[in-house]
Image (cartoon, rainbow, N blue to C red):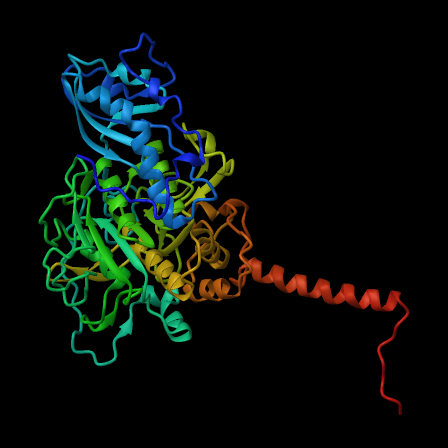
Length: 535
């Protein structure tokens, strides 16, 4: 099955470059040897049975001339072109079949009888980069409620939180206050209107009184445009109606755009258009499910893709989906993971994602929150545009005792999963303020205004990244920005002064002083004096 692909608004983008020019000759029947540089998972090489494999091909670079609105269509056309020789071969070869073709990652999911087809066959196609499992990603392991342990292994069942549903003046949660979201609502008069946030998770309870799932037609129970469910092969399940296979997806959705039915304001961007793609069954899902969900989100014109999921370590297969989503104009926000210092999850640790760690109400990073310094050389296929090293997380946000929605009620939960939707909501607020802002603009505003408490220890960038997100300061920076990039890595970015003031403000103040002093010196050197009134 091939997922629906976007179409270029005008003309074909294929003439923009020469990607895939030699693919017409890429036929496994040719007397060519397998490229030994092609990576084939060891677990697959030892298999002697029918297996599912992902064949990844070279990813085209979206030319600068292609606008973000057309980037997904460009990628879809290029993927179809480059995959054609492989798909043609599969169609006429026994023991192998195509399950799904993707474009946000230039990849094809195949079922292969390894007793009839050697996996090294795929290394003979010129554009193939890697062959790997349809590996699993999952909800980060839930930390214990006291948040003191690193690498918790139990997914504890949380109890329903008591809430005051009779409150006449709902107050924002502590997390929203720390984020300064209410200040943005008041100062800029927006709560995320006009911005689409796609949450990819376990599903959503769309009947919850605090949640409104976006739909083109409220009378249609399938919520066209606002809901999708995908199977393990990345195929969309037709006729699926909204539900939560666990509780996680409903909880993170509430933090993005929840209302006030609980008696508290729980959503950072309560007026954002909320989409939800079920890509995790209870707690886990496949690479194909995640990629299919990202494609659906982009086809649905999502401005933000929020993923409180991942897999520990470096997984190159997730680089292209994140980068291509970003090139298409969407900000990808993902959890760094709950396994403590010197760990991080993909896709959160992909440089082009906004990686999110957790802090408590006092701005302290709990032990479970992931964080580490990452060298580009640790990846097999890093992009040349990446810095030589960088830090994950990029930023931190409230992720301890976060109260939000679950099917049938509310729960207070810890985790970087809970921090991630706070940042997704903050990005939605920024995009609502400036609909023309690019992912670079939005991330620059977030990173350049994030702050670190004066109590933070030296070397805290691997725990805080750029710091705690301040939505109000980021909004102020966005509207006053001349779009100069500040996307430095956290370890090399601005320092935070002991009073909590970001040093970019101090640098600005210092610059003003320098300009004034320089002007005075020039005046004096020219022989002028400051005029005085005659006595």
